[in-house]
Length: 452
Image 1: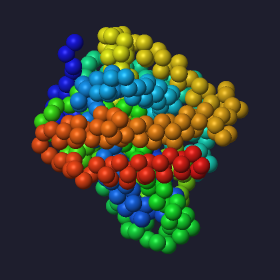
Image 2 (image 1 turned 45 degrees about the vertical axis):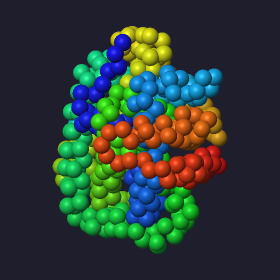
Image 3 (image 1 turned 90 degrees about the vertical axis):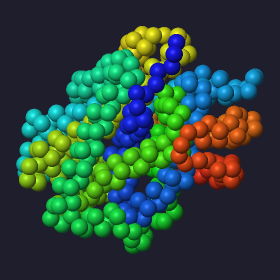
Image 4 (image 1 turned 180 degrees about the vertical axis):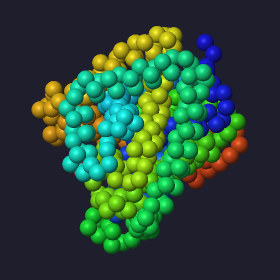
């Protein structure tokens, strides 16, 4: 069967960026910036994104484009006879399933909050305790959470089952275009609020005093982590889009486009949040509760807050759903390539599987709230720990070693594939940076993630 392809370069960039643009950008990025002193963290994040994230991104894309296959079969097509690199493909796909076991629940939260703002659940004058109670009530209601999770999963697989161009690419173009318009509108509104200037200075101007309490070492480590995880590398989430892309452009050039779009959304999410928080005297180091407790409290106390809150959570819904669609495509393609299933069969079976696999996470906040797993973490945090602290960094290291060592595909083959087409090239001297520098950075992230 002939391999599907993207209908346009724009489609590839928007879908790939949609995979990277998700909760890591619009939820995790702002609260990590707030916890790590603002401007200096942002500067370090940008540096690490391009010296560490971009090289590994080109490697995942190279394996996909050269093999025209998903994870397991992609490795098999490129590895030397008798080698076992393809075993990582199975682990990568297990990581995609594990990611969706909790990501669909969080995506459901975003949609639930969109509904609550539209329907007037959040009312002017609510204090932080009242807005926090809305989130607490959502977590305590497994039926409500299951409804929003199921809606996310079923809608995702219906779209993916329509095919690459008619389903994923078509919907992603509309959704990502709307997301980019929404984020610009929200950012402009936020930076024009009274008192927004102080928030902008905290966010964009490096200030040593802001990181004194956190410690520069901790800020550097946090920036490395965020830069690495924002691109969803290591679990073949990006490789699949390499298998669909044309050979007209180099992978470094296309990877740069994805990184720039991903960064634009992350930076704009901060432009929405920090001016608003400073304008209304709200602490910006609230951590994960920033989106579901702190920000709703900001919206309900500003003029037109119901509208602005609705628009914000529409943006959040698009951002999280874009990643869900991308990973569902990866899972479906894996089943089609490996087991010979049709796209519709892969969609139906995986839809049922993800619905069932997502239940423990949402039940972990109510029925199974007493169940604590890794290091006393709840179910969602335990699943996230495995994906974020183990599978992503280890998987990225394996992709890197496969692409640049003689025991794998080899640097020359990777370089030839990456440099096919017009655009930025991978130079010969980069081999030594890829062999020594990038692995060291990834190991630092892995160790810090395990002991942090």
